[in-house]
Image (cartoon, rainbow, N blue to C red; front, side, top):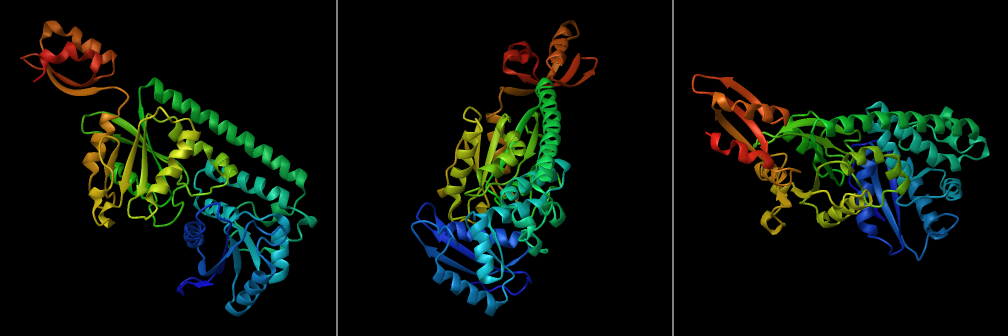
Length: 415
């Protein structure tokens, strides 16, 4: 049993993990600790059991369950959270033995999503994911659900919805799917308009708590919620950024990822991840000060591959380099940059990397065009390259951001 020294919070949690050798159980438990804190509770202690496979009745063995029961009684534990997905039977059996409310990793993540959702779409996605997860767990006329009360793991649809019959919940699920489909359609129309208008999009993705929102704020002064908590950002945020070469891009902040995120949760929040899938450039942000930063990059890159981003330029952004002993030990170059978003260190390198990976090669020109060559202006205007123009006694002075295919036309008029 590992005890944690934390006396500030009031809702007390016991963390339970199963080490079957299928994944890094210790690292996952460390992440569960952060998840519990993000949900607003106090992780009091953790217990880990090595097993070939989870016990079908209680996930852990009877001896450990008795140990947990005793610990909960003597330490005033409010709820138990397992670092694995539990079956309805396992939850009922554990609660019957311990008389303590029990949730699993998935319910905890959904609970944090319910706290963080701000947009209508985000709230609908949370409710849909919760109902789909809890649907097969409704049994006994909601007897078990009626014991939940309030607190971590109970936010979202609410007790009254969960106690209604399954037919009503199915109708609710269909309604939410339809509403989200309409929102998806509107978002696709917006994306099409962006493409038509030639707007270049840059998506910020990465492991949760890597500093994505801080980077977004540093680049665009977007005012995005930036906290040292997992899933501080759930809803995608878009802001314009003007690069040093004069090109404007649309920056999009997306929901953070965690290891072992259940597939149906990825599906439920795919809309925010699709912003990355359809972006022109992707910034894969990781916390360089974490001992597991390479794993975090791998988690994100694997998901990006699943979303079909293999042909999209991906820039690995090693954030929080001010907390690293020697940041130059980290990879650098065309597709990797080292930054501290909080201290605005390395931002110029990041902007240059974005410029290098733009879908088209662009140059910013200050031009002086003779009056008899005014047709050049018409071409630039039609291409959307013209930024400004002023008629002077010497000729037409203009500022333009020009694609490579038109450089030949303006080279001789550069000043």
